[in-house]
Length: 391
Image (tube, rainbow, N blue to C red; front, side, top):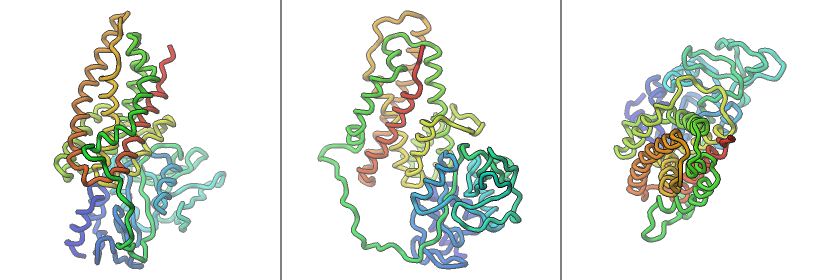
């Protein structure tokens, strides 16, 4: 097996993620005859970016928190299913990548309701129980995954949040390279990409400013400890889980400008991460985390775009929120001042995001960037809407 071919695959965008190092270390790196063309032990085929060849399948690992059914649905968007296991090599691959990720991972295994020890793969392939031992199966543990601590296959409640791996059959035909590409969405003369993204999301930011009970209480000078802590707990839960997504990347190998900003963001988010993997999450948070699925295996510039929405909103709010006319209590004054200090740090971070994105905007799809930014601005709207202060 050629070392050159492995280096070739490592140079692809997806190799920023830990999956490639697992494939490489296990000796599963195929020898492509051309970019994406992979001879397999059963059949030759095509694995397009950002998928990697794993013997006779294409695989893509997603460091995105999802329930089992959400993960299977997201895999289906790319004509794939959650990863199924059929050999000791498959088991070794899953064990290595789960250890690398440091969080539990979903596979495509699920049990039929009310039928004990009746397991199926979501891709319809045969399920062989003799390959490994499946843990306890009961009515509340109908989906199959691997734990990151013991590297064993275990059943778990399907509503738990985990990372996941998608797999699909290799394609027998290479896509037509001459197929006409969609017309690009061009920026107006003199308009930067960040300004274009913001113009399509500013109405959402305005709505957050007008409707968030947390921000309204800050502006009125009536913020209370319980309201402040409620919002910060929910925000910390979101930020902490995004930290684990960022941790799955080899940020040292990314373009220095982009990698440095992602690394700094990861370190800021790290302080809010709980080492205990989430079992369940509020509905708004589940949807917010799923929105990282389209960007984690793409050019890391789009990951920057996704993360920049939170920073841009906080910077906008700081500049737009009126100062409270009077603050009735010393505690409210302290909480308001703490919020301002944290938001001022976000202003500096938002400027860094803007500078890096606009420095590389010629390499980015404008339409996609606008949509990614707006989607993640909507995540911030969901955060504010679902952390209403009731007192």
